[in-house]
Length: 124
Image (tube, rainbow, N blue to C red; front, side):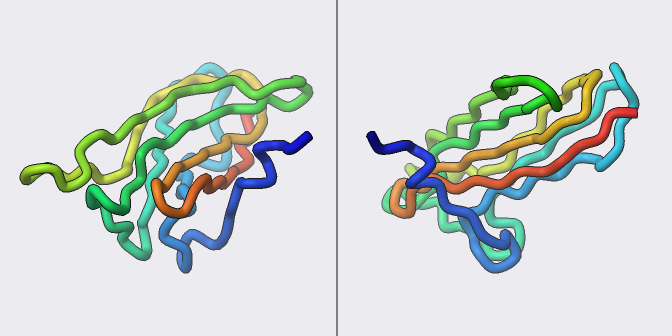
């Protein structure tokens, strides 16, 4: 049986325009609200045209010791140069955590497939 993990790509976001960039503090206080920012194309702008675009970003949190991650959100980008509207794949959400763990982000490019990144976060 094939696994979807076979199709996940990653790389250094400074040299690869498809990798989602996760911006969160490394340390946060338990139960204190903070922002998670995820974007694609921070160093090298991704073309967001009808023929080549980032369709969505998904963000997950996997708490230490838990079997499964929890989906924080799915963010769809619907305008890719249609008319005069261009979506830029940048999302911000606010969350509270009470456990350390890992933030995961997936992005989907209609031409180049699935891309992933992750970042550890420590709750004090």
